[in-house]
Each structure stands twice: as structure tokens, then as C-alpha cells.
Length: 105
Image 1 (cartoon, rainbow, N blue to C red):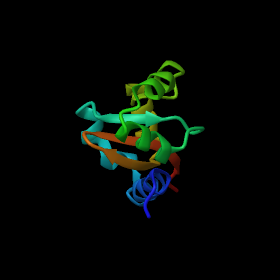
Image 2: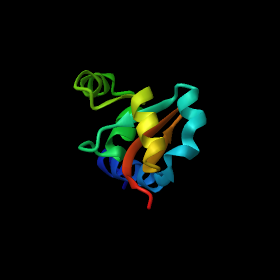
Image 3: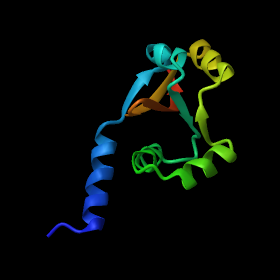
Image 4: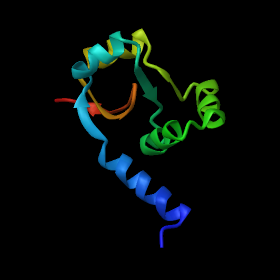
């Protein structure tokens, strides 16, 4: 029997499967379109994506107010290009959530 808790775990597992590492330079068109959102390193990317999918506006506003979540800034984008940064990314349409993973060598 499927419970709400099981459904939540399944949903989270599916979101996790949709994440991928990609070079930031490959996501420039999303940044230029204004749909790239930066997730702070101390947040769980999958949890943020789940809360966005559930339209949890209260939690999203808290993350935004604390500076842990929001549109990728020009400064972040320039730094990530310069450093050839690899990011974890997941799509929560129409948004692309990104979290720096490491620099490419």
C-alpha cells in the first residue's frame, strides 16, 4: 500500500535520478534566459528541487532571504566560466537549479 511518506520518498528518488553533473559553460543559454537558479553549497540540491516542485513558497522565500537560493548572478556566472566549474544541475521546469560541484582540471 502506497502511503504519503512512500510517495514522498519515491518522488525524491526520482528527482535525485534527474540530477547530473555538467560544465557550467554548457548552461550559458539558461543563464542568459534568466532561468538558472543557484543553490548554496550547504543546501541539498534534491531537497530544494523537491520544495520547488511542491511550490513550497514559504521555504523558498526563506532560502532566498538568507542568500542561499536565487538567480545566478553575473559575478557567479563569470567566476564559474573563468574557473571552468562543474555544477550539479536539475530541471524544475522552467528553472534549472545549479550547485557548484568542483573545478574541471
